[in-house]
Length: 251
Image (tube, rainbow, N blue to C red; front, top):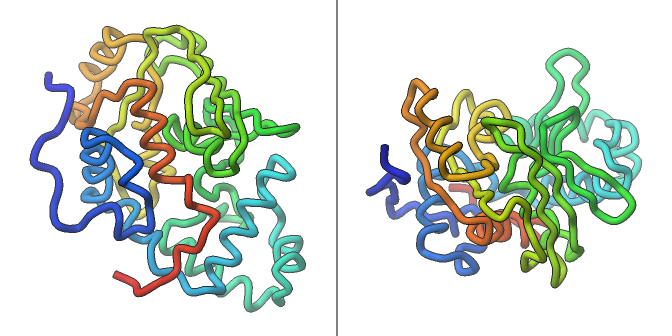
């Protein structure tokens, strides 16, 4: 079983999604390109100024409180009435920028953050946040220019995995066990990365356990095996500029 998928890239590049591919190695760029070609990431580009202002405010509120804000609190923070905000949030949801509860309408995820137990805990200052996946967790430090400690586990055996950053999230301080790696899978379904792609962006305690897990997957688990350093590169490419504007012409 091959460790990677070849010939995945088209002229549609991850740079079009407002990301920072120049910070990543060719292998990481190829992995991110494969994710985009599956349908993810593209919709992040081209938000209106108001949509992007709400997105950035939402992410900052998430980080400050450790959880998603209520719709009412978000409306007060961005100084919009509920009707205006609801219309804007509906568009962000349709573009897979946020995820909302199907019954209550509450915000339950705004990449890279999520509610509930995702298996990826990130200590950011005084708050412990939950990331959507391994790569999202690795990008949070650079996104907020602060060092983080990530606590997760091997997706096969449950062995504890811990990763800490330095230089404001741009480098790795350590990770344990030293054999731990990142799997950048390729799966995007129903226009929602949280319910598909994020399930296959994972930590494994060793190459052997990654191989064993892949043998259990009916689709053969296409994707890329990344070192922890490459996983950090991928996280930075996705999220380091995420609090900056992603506005511009829509694809």
